[in-house]
Image (cartoon, rainbow, N blue to C red; front, top):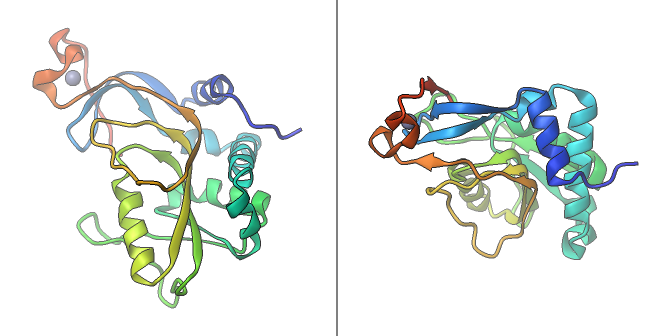
Length: 204
Ligand SMILES: [Zn+2]
């Protein structure tokens, strides 16, 4: 029943739920784009949350190393937006635990809740709804490593690389769909601005 959804099936769900929008958007980073994606809009429907996180967990379980350590694995999200995916993946992989990082204010570093401390040698899969610039996932990885935990993989519903996306070296990256939006560095380099398309500012 729960197979791995194809790229087209994932995109259809994102469009149907309003998670994927076309237009002319300006991100807080200053990038302009012709597409905007807010995966939590799709994840509010339980059947889609389940379909997507079970699909993602199947990709993880295909990795023999990750499958072998499943019962000891921690699934860690960089923010609450990734939690529906993290809990779905944890259940399907039969991992040990889920937790997440957060920050009080935008200019503060990511942190875990009080009394929550990753253990030295703990094996972790980072899970989020989307990988765009990857800066938050990088910060989370550094935070986990500062406790001596070891990140063994990265799993997201949508991989949407931008010109500023950081690389994670040899770390295995799993995703259900890869979306290529057109990104422009700023208004001066934006084709949509040049055409005078109305601009919408987006928060994330
Ligand atoms: Zn523009």
